[in-house]
Image (spheres, rainbow, N blue to C red):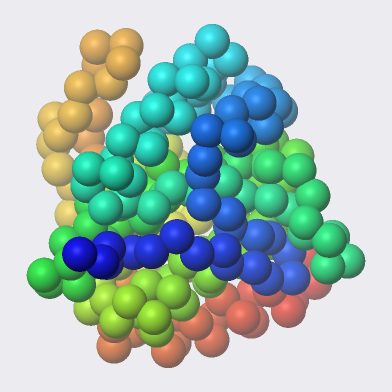
Length: 201
């Protein structure tokens, strides 16, 4: 039986998405250390000693639930460089052709660069044009204002807030903000993302 999402490499001018494997463990650890991202309490970026567990969980989601985790490589002059982050297609609902983009984080050195914009363009194009999705969701912590603003800049619309939605590793309760892009909006969002990539920063 085939998977809804098969492993695929997605490459653009600024970023390349490569299916996550066990071989990426050391590169993920180095990327997360750029800015010590695990210190942001509202994210789930792995601390150095937690990298293996994070990777095992991501691969378990892939094998049992049909998710597709990726590492992100920065591309310069057509040459893929080191891993600078990770993202994932998950919460896959193949029957209804829906999925979520999330578990996304980037090394501090590439934040606010073209990398995130192009990653979202590549993922959304794959979801809407190859997988024929009818909707793609994004979710983030209520307190993660940077992430909420970034999702809105993509052109996603806020659907609502799930109160006390999840328990965080530190025991706190997370209110989750839900956004989505639907298939009829994709052409406009695609044009907007291409425009953002062409505008000098």
